Length: 231
Image: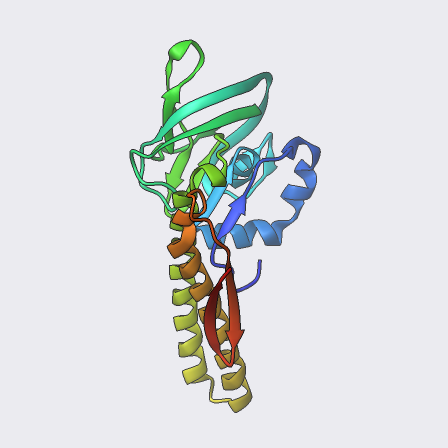
């Protein structure tokens, strides 16, 4: 991952096709493990299994301790769910409609606060997923267009992480004692601030995505300043 990564989204997929490749990329797994300790990470379905310690014996990212395994049963269906734990994506009590589609199951090795509560097969109550530090991971697929507030919340957490990284770059520049390094750090800092400003603007405008007053926001960086042009 790039050094200035401030957030990560791991969507669904078919991990059974590439378990060896996923496991073999040790550098990426280590980077994701380090990122998850300081920044927001949103994982769905296969993304959840990738964050586990292993998938059918193949070492994964070990962000969430426990094992994922393939089963003979397909879990499929729409869910009316409620978020039961505050996270980088959802506020507790927030209701969403999503769906499950997976042939894997996870067994956590420690107790994590659940991400969701909903009714499963036969109306049985289900607590699903995990929230840990900045990580929100579950089997439930949700659509961003149906919940722009969650997108804004995630972007806001990412913007705060960018601000934190920018502060670290300032400290490095102060102690570098090298004019060239100082100029490079200053350029990196400006880039980080620009991206943080862009995420802040996204957060401000997320409420307009689903309303009648839909507009587009063009972000331009001119002479070191961020400008917003509404179209």
